Image 1 (spheres, rainbow, N blue to C red):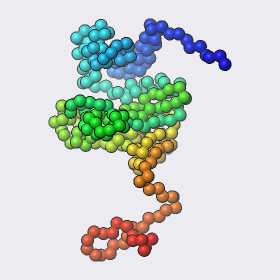
Image 2 (cartoon, rainbow, N blue to C red; image 1 turned 60 degrees about the vertical axis):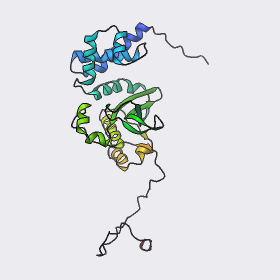
Image 3 (spheres, one colour; image 1 turned 120 degrees about the vertical axis):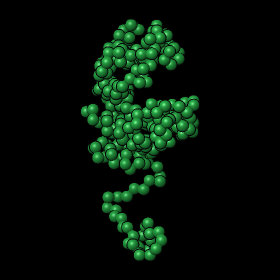
Length: 263
């Protein structure tokens, strides 16, 4: 069986294709300097080099201190909607993947210190243990020919939501309130579904599958799903009926369930 030949692409051609792709993705950003900085940042991430922190990256690209300040402002303070870029990339790539499923997952990002938004000692499946990290909930479309992200959301623990000075220091918008990881995942699925992409079953592990509200949100939108559930989850058939115990008039805590003799 003859192997298909893979077309050879030079570094210059690959760069031109990347720049053309990025020009499509960032077209929705409102200001020309934002579009320039977005393309430059991606170049720094994908081109050859070691450390990917901002200053070493710009140094390798031959940029000066003024560009550093501009890019720093773009990443930290400039008002732009990241979901626009995620959507633009998804709409460009999605049709070519032969998408079979949307996969919900979360990723632990190890961190030192206590100032990064959402950082705390918490369990991370990525680390396989409890560690000082941030947790990002993600949604990806997965197909025969690759994958493309459909969205990310930073998990902000309750202690962060309630600590106003800490929130202000980390520049967390006041409108952001506490949401569980399944709630964040459900919102990502809703957002991606609103883009008009061809639907696919949502896959998730038991951390999401055990949550009734997550499954219900998908069902209400007509999204099919295949999720894992833990052994503790009870399942009842559609013919099941439930009776609440009648009040007895006696003082004390009311009965929460019928006694076995009344089943």
